[in-house]
Length: 123
Image 1 (cartoon, rainbow, N blue to C red):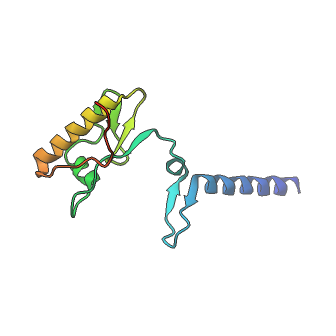
Image 2: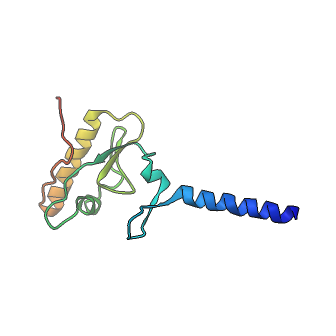
Image 3: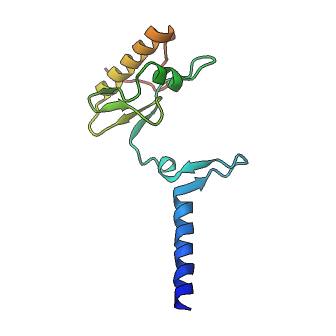
């Protein structure tokens, strides 16, 4: 009896862990989104560039060899190339300089000029 009770408790704990780390989006698609992504655990600046007509900014950035590119502590995410992340102490200048590098590399490879999705204010 004691072993059965321990087994049942263990099963309940495992089910709770599953639902904690794999949350369904609640739509008819049945897609899952990671607990970590849904709670924004990773520090990031946001989707950085608008998608050009008939294309995807993240695809162009990755194919321009920008994945993992850094300026100071600002970096192109290895998970999604249209996200710039703060690896610790990135400044606004680091972010802007990294964005300019990306725009230049994508333009040189595809002759497509990416536009900022975010609004840059200040100097």
